[in-house]
Image: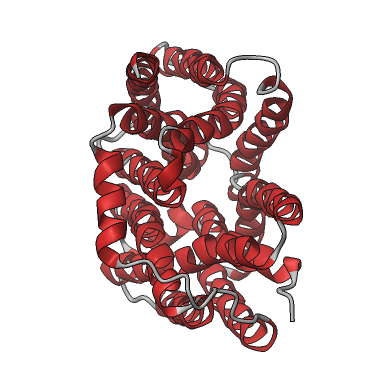
Length: 388
C-alpha cells in the first residue's frame, strides 16, 4: 500500500498552518485573557521554537523506531495540545499548550517528507516533494485568511478547536491509510547522528549559510506576528482585514519561489542568495523609514513587505541548496540542522517583537538587523567555501 500524496501534504503543512492561522486572533486573545503584547508574541515564538526542536528530534526517532509509531505519537500530541490551547484559561496555559502543539506538529513536517523519500523512486519522489513544497508555501498564505474569518465569526478559540479537529482527522486518516515505509536495516545509531551534527557545527561554511538562510527567510515571522497589532492598533484597520495582509506577504514569497526556479539555472546560486537578501534589506529600510518619519500607512507597510517576501522566496532555496552542499555525506543531518536554525531565528525575531510599545518600529529594526546579519553570514560562508 502506497502513501496518499494528499494525506502526506496535509500532515506536512499542518504544523506551519497552525502557526499562521492564529496570527489574526492575537489581539482578541490578548484582550480576552488580559495578556500583554509580549505574552501574545510568546505564543508565536514558543511555537516556532517547538517546530525547530522537533525537526532535530523526529528525524532520528523515526529512523530508529519507524515512521508510523513516531508520526502517530506526534499527531496525538498535536491534537491534544490543540484542545488544551482552545480551553486555556490564561496566557501562560496558552503558551505551554502552543509549545506542545508545535512539538506535535513538527512530526508531520519531518516524517511526511521522509515517507516520500522512503516509498518513491528518485524521479517520482522529486515530483511528489515539489507538490508538497508548493502546498507548504501556499498554506501559510491561506492560513491567516482562514484564521481571520474564524476569529471574526466564531471567536478566537474557534481557530484552536479547528486545529485540534485537524489533528484528529490527520491521526485517523494516517492510522488507516499510511503504511510503515522505513527499511528495517535503516537504523543509524544515535552516536553517529550526534557526530554528524557536531561536524556541521564546526564547519564555518555550513554555519554561515544556515544563519544567513534563517535571517534571510524566517525573520519575516517578526512582521507576521506583529501585523495584527500594527494594522489594528496603530493603523486602525478593522479586524476582518487582518488576515489579508500576511496573505499578501506570503504571495510575495510564492512569487519569489517561482522566480527562484528560473534564476537558479542562470545565476551563481551563492550570489543569488546574497542578492535576494539585499532586496529584503532594502525593503526593510523603506519600512523603517516610513515608521521613523511617522508616515506609515497600510500601503507603506504592505508594499515593502511584499517586496521583502519576494526576496525571501528567492533566498530560501538558494541558501538551503548551498547549506546541504557543504558536506554531501551528511545531507540528512544538514537538512535537520538547517531547519532548526531557520525556526530558531524565527523564534528569536518573533520574541523580540514584544519589546517596547511601538510594534511597527520594533519590527522594522528587527528586519533590518536580521538582514544585515544575514549578509555578513553569507559573505563569510562564501569566502570559507571558496577557500576549501
